[in-house]
Amino acid sequence: MKKLLFASCLIIGLNAIGQVIIPADSLKKHVYFLASDSLEGRGFSTVSGMKAAKYIAAHFEKVGLTMIGESYLHPFQQKYGTTILQGNNVVGLIEGSDSLFKDEYIVLGAHFDHVAYDMVEGRKIVYNGADDNSSGTSAIMELARALVQHRNELKRSVIIVAFDGEESGLIGSGYFVRQAIVPIEKVKLMMSIDMIGRYAESKSLTMGAMGTLVGGEKMLEVLADKHDIDIKKTGEAISNRTDSKPFGDAGIPALHVTTGIIGPYHKPEDDAGTLDYLGMEKVSGLLYELTVEASNRGSLDPIDALVVKTKNKGIPAFRLEAKLNTGSNHHYYPKEFYNGKSKFSYETGLVAQFMGSDHLSLQAGALYSSMASDFIPGNFRTHSITTPLSIVLGTKMNQNIRQRFFVSFGAYYSYHFAGTVGGKSMDFDNDFDRDETGLVYGIGLEVMSVVVGVDFRYGLTELAKGTGYKEFRNRGTFFSLGYFF
Ligand SMILES: [Zn+2]
Image (cartoon, rainbow, N blue to C red; front, side, top):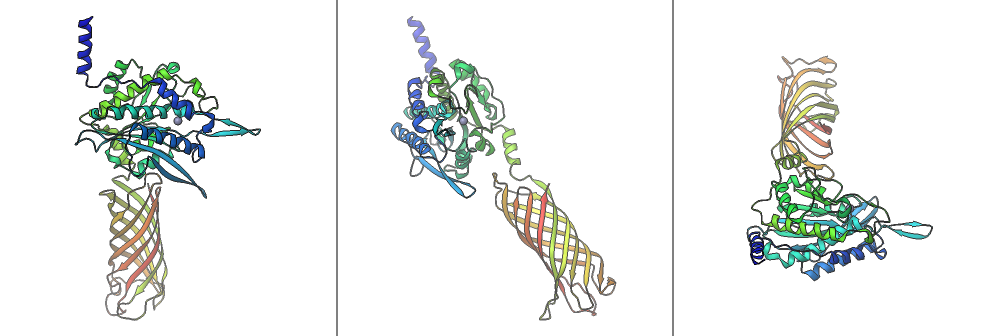
């Protein structure tokens, strides 16, 4: 007996992390409040949703989470047509104890909103959302308490977030990633704990995307064994049905922790009385240890596949654009006080773009140009091959709406292979030069793969040679339309 006791102490001693219990009763208390009829199904941007947010914030304060900013509540707005809806993420921090690692973060998140209620014949039918997702919310609330109590066991910092607006399209989590109250690249691991209330029925726990963390599946295997939990699914696919998605899109290993969609999913019957609280205790115990373990690891890295995928969501290193410039060109006479009248002109062709960074690219094109102008002997039009070469400075691609602004500037060379003046073929041997160089610059907007903008051409060389004509150069303004493929 004594020997045995000694042996088990030794095991606990060797295992730096002691077993911490997240008691079923505490989890149950939160679920019974959040999933009560009085919270009316915690609809996004409702008074009841706000009630839930304040309840969670009060708990964060009570257990000793640190605020990031002025409040535990982080309000955000979402536009729906002409209506602006207001939501709140509830955020608290447990600062890591290691001076080197505490600037890195593990995010434990769970959405607290649900789908509100229906009115049927004047009666309110509340969708209580006990499993979805009072279960996950109660888990992060009690994980917060346990982690604060054992904060000296954490090297990295842990952020606890109750997300709003998940059911309306991952709004709160998307906002959290975009707003970046901590530098988002410092978030090394994220868990979206969404529906963990039915372990007794599922008899297994899904830990989706555990494989996106280098060594993640191995780490989980050891812990799951210890906690006697059957793990169902891990892999490298980041779920887009829960708050892990915006984090995964940002290249962060982001897990979906769930006992699965079983039972009355998105139905009024998803009630507090139907959950398996001992199962939630079990799952929460595992998540506690996983968090502590992860916070102490030498490195927390995303697998290469996740990094590559994320990079490709920005702008590819090389891409081709089909381009059409339509507008007007006129002749500029440097030694006169007048300009030629402008005529419809256009150019079209292909432009290749080489991305140097998120903001800087080099662009080279091959275009057919038809530049015209009103001219004293009659209409003037050249047919040319033009090769513009430009530097493009752009804003970073907005991942959500795939949009960026840019300015460009550079130079072009045109070879005039044909032309007419006053209805006759141009005499390139005596009157006109075949070569033209000049400057190009422009501004534009890229949305999805479509580019719209304004381009300017500023010719530097004389178009005429010999003495037959006054000196004149091309000037053009074009509406530019492009498509990246
Ligand atoms: Zn959910």
